[in-house]
Image (cartoon, rainbow, N blue to C red; front, side, top):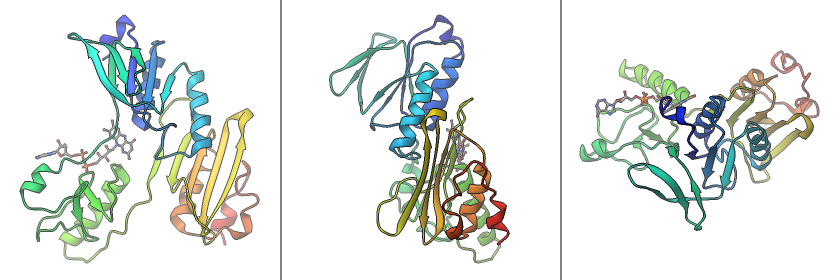
Length: 271
Ligand SMILES: Cc1cc2nc3c(=O)[nH]c(=O)nc-3n(C[C@H](O)[C@H](O)[C@H](O)COP(=O)(O)OP(=O)(O)OC[C@H]3O[C@@H](n4cnc5c(N)ncnc54)[C@H](O)[C@@H]3O)c2cc1C
């Protein structure tokens, strides 16, 4: 890819998820001016951000020179021996000298399926990481546990740890992993943990948006406990908020001030 980009081609990245954004920015930092991203959803990072956060992030990336086609689905890649144009379902087309597909991962279940294991989106496992066949276990990206296919390192580690206990004769349950993602784009701080959107009376949402400084913070609370967070434009407090979500501590007395940059999280942990 590095050799290829010497000629300065226009590049279209298919997929506005974490990896799509990271590669687009990496290419633009190498001096490519024609880097675009096409995303089928009408906003970036649909799994990690809500609408306000996505818009804020888009503005930051546009300032870095990346163009976006949102709400567009690629239908054809056109060229004779090499790419020269990409068509969207709505008939619009863009020229491109290269295409990078970053449109998600999904477990390859064929081997498991032909071996007689139950599969759905991934290889189905129970809370003990057992598949549908005795003495066959699974952990990591290939698994589907309680309807979730994680595709994340922390989940793979948690599952591997629990499975190791179980193989050694201890009955340990895997209860799931709170997903946490950090965008690795220089100059942009973004971490999303747990739930990022919520509907229903059982949830309370607290936000702080400072457009001038590009800061957007959001907490989702259930029964006074933080169950999800978006932290964009600042890294101040991100480790603490992650720890807070893991701890399950109530934040009742701090709701008015918890999103302030100067908030001291040790007050909650010391309670
Ligand atoms: C570009 C990229 C960036 C990522 N960045 C992050 C990140 O920042 N944070 C994060 O949490 N996660 C990230 N991930 C996801 C992370 O890599 C995975 O969640 C993690 O690697 C899962 O571990 P695993 O052991 O289940 O699978 P893998 O690491 O994929 O390992 C599976 C291994 O099994 C081998 N294998 C497959 N089939 C067979 C077979 N039939 N026989 C023998 N061997 C076989 C494969 O070759 C592979 O070596 C990223 C993934 C990608 C692709």
